[in-house]
Length: 389
Image (tube, rainbow, N blue to C red; front, side, top):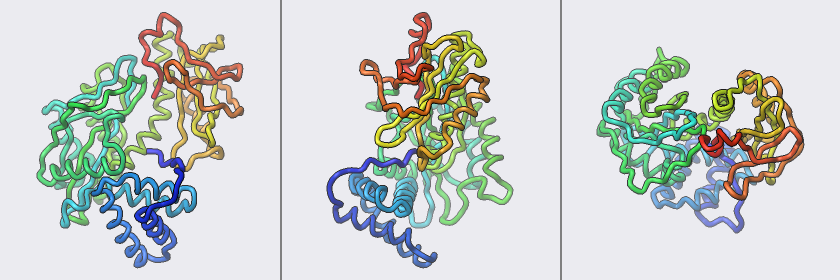
């Protein structure tokens, strides 16, 4: 999940000032003994705000530090995320953690967000226990495959959900999700789905397989791709999918955000290969930076090689500390070449962050150096979701 902040007007309240002071103290600390002092006080302050559902104060402190103290901002963001995903007040004797298992998917049809049948849930439990989780952990699986729109909202919403599913994990029970009133899922060609779980272990014991002497992240991911992917595939009919390593909720979400960028490029090239019967060698890509007050993202306009009309587009958002000095354009070009696209145009002009007034879709760069609406040929347009996520 991107940590970019938008600065707000007005002074800080007392609670936000205290958070900023504690985070700055932690960032400036010179030893582990001092660290523990700041961490304990910061954790207690954050827990109180999460319990009071005071999202505004948490965000105000983050906004302030983002523009004034980068290292303190990182410390505060890490602490808020850690407290939100770990349900610290659930048990004094156990470590509890909210876990996400993201799935990247693309399809020319609607990508489901769906309830998980009991048999599939039981199968997922077996493979999570065998390949991802440490021996003997208690855990709970939510029986729903979430779209991004349906995830817990904000730090306080995440903390509340972690507390509920963490309690189920303490009892070794799966969590039933009531879907009544759940937000609708937007239709995109490429999108992410999330399997959510919580794990509980005696304090200080390993949570994940790679914390054990004979485990590793690489081995866990390889096994999960094979076994977990096979379990998830029936839930996403008509979709090509790729799983992301399950881990702590915010870390997994950021990994999914990062992995979804090259995945969306590959999905777009693959889709055009089938929809237009145009192999990658017959496509041309135009890459350009798009700015608001700062560089926000790159957009890729895709055309047929001998035509100037943009038939499709992909957004490559900047994440974390990435800025105009990052090598995003080179990364995009490398992914396109891996896909087989050889004709690539890099535009250096700063384009405005514009969207279509009618449908809200992003505008994409054309070979002529203009920003235009991506339009599939009329015979394919009706079958295509509006744009890539």
